[in-house]
Amino acid sequence: MITFGRSVVFYVVSALTVPGLALAEEPDTWSMSRAELEAVGLGQSRGMPIPVPADVDRLRPPTQPKAHASPGVVFVNFDGAQLSPGADDAKSNITQITNLAGTFAPYGEGTKREAVMQALLTDWAAYDVFITDERPASGEYTMNMTGPTNPFGGGVLGIAPLDCNDSQTHSNITYAFHSVNDQFSAAVTATTVSQEVAHSYGLEHVDEPGDIMNPYNAGGDASFIDACIQIVTNGQPIACGSQHAAHCAGGTAQNAHLELLDLFGAAVPDTAAPIVAITYPSDGDVFEPGASFFITVEATDDVAVQGVQLFNNGTPLGTDGDEPFGWDVENIPEGEYSMYVIASDAAGNETTSETITITVGAAPAEDDDDDEGGSSGGDGEGEGGSGPEPDTDGAESVGFDDDGADTGCGCTQAPSRGAGLLMFAVFGLFRRRRSA
Image 1 (cartoon, rainbow, N blue to C red):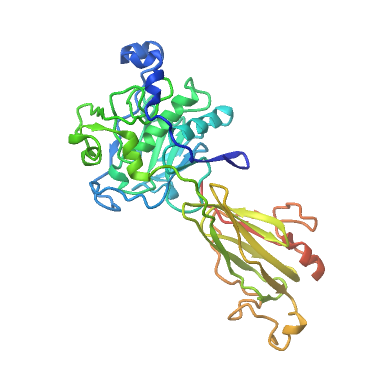
Image 2 (cartoon, helix red, strand yellow):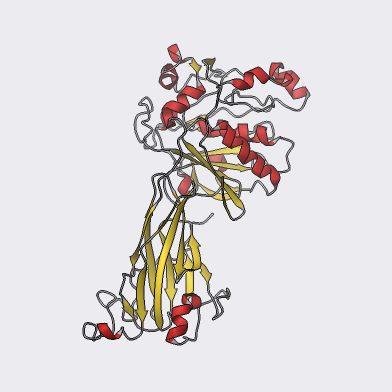
């Protein structure tokens, strides 16, 4: 478990010791009929998954198995979002379940939220899957919107697209209709989240209360069971039969555990750190006092970059959690600045970039012969120019006074060169973000 601020990021590394063990500890409710479940406040449905529309683009045919070349990433969005209609794209908050387009309310804060994340950690422990409640800054991920917005009524706990073999996109959006104040336990909420996410990987409902893919809430703490269990269709045809037939002859039963192993492989630790570099400015660039430009950063990871933090002379200035990474510099004072960035991933791996040093004002004495124009920013960009054109839509201004305190605006009075060397944060920074 790696903590980023108030949010908690989990990396799944352990394996289930006995698949299906939950069956041996079946609670009394798992033997009840649905009518009996409803009599004790259970029995809510997890809605029938919605097959992917035939006209959307796919990564490959839905009958073609997925090659698990990289881990899966699941982002549990407890914080709400404004969703737009269209083919699923979690990174852009676009949903193909048009009933959910619009404002999706947040789940709420508290210890129950953390308990849900712990239960999800257990649900997915056997598989090479990351579970996080912070939006990844790069890469593909399945997003589960977890919150109380529910256009289907209180008898439905969740819904998702049914994406056979995860063939449409690795960035489907799924839904769990829960809130921190509802009557459901953290384990039940986690079961809803896990089931809806699994639908987006082609898993269907099965007739077993102890399996996460059971269509009705029977309480307890279900798991993905290592056994062929009859698929429940409610009169609809089985959509992903070829996927199920790989482990259960005929494709009318489903082994959720083995199918997830096929899709993602067994859990392995993430030991690969990101690759990161500042791509503008370049080391040795010279700018005129008052210049404006955009700091650009390239960062990649084998799973996903969690964020990039900017430093000057060891002092942290700001973190960008959205790709493309960068900061807009306004009216930079005279001085010399040594900058580097640290990129991190969800498993806590970090990489520090090479340090670049830029000069604002007269170039160092040894460079005077080569920089008669007072700039080496490249194609004249250092002469009060701007470098790459920034896109600051939705940007957040972060300004600092001479003491490093956040003032919300850029500095209007340039300090001495020495002060510029020590306090890079005197000019405004704009962190570029996607809208939530």
